[in-house]
Length: 282
Image 1: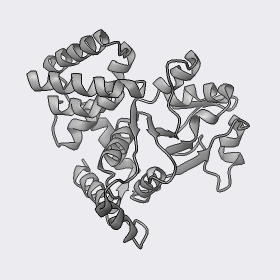
Image 2: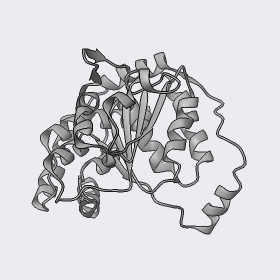
Image 3: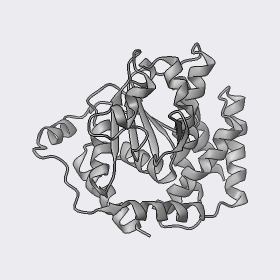
């Protein structure tokens, strides 16, 4: 188990990137649970930098980045058409900027990648993808078409990344005069083994009962989360327990799935209140 290495990398990232602890935590949860994540926020907030920095800390890691536009075709994302030969079909992490600016037909063709990590080119092909990250300054709302919301639902973790507000944080940012350089390095084999260990982590009936209470309460408040989404959250909870060095999911791990329980920004406060209230009462 490479938990000691992961914690060192996490600390190095946290020390380097100012006020990005939550973003770093979410990124690592997504990668080690192999679930997709959506980062909401304007350009220039270190979203891409953090992903590239983590890639530097993994030996043999392949990172693919692409900025989507309405004219983008699926072929544009493939390794045979990308400079450097690393495309969405042979990378470990893909970052798709301005995700919702893509043509709906192209975005829908990505569903197999998001769901099963397979691609049709034109034959069915299993790809080495761990996680797809998408970024956008746009957030879906209740008026969006069902196809777009179905795509958005495939991103299990979501976070709004905000600009720095405090003067002290801004000064720290201004004093950074070097690129991130990790002193600790993971291997792809270690990440694979960690994923296998994460799947073995136990989740008790007590945790399932708490999740049902949350599901029931947020539904009363008109926040709908599908049964499939709750089922997928098990991987996030187990990864959270793994990062704590535990072999069993505990109720504190549930705090890490709050970002998975809202679809619209207007739901964020409701989810936060409900989860905090239930976890404090059990």
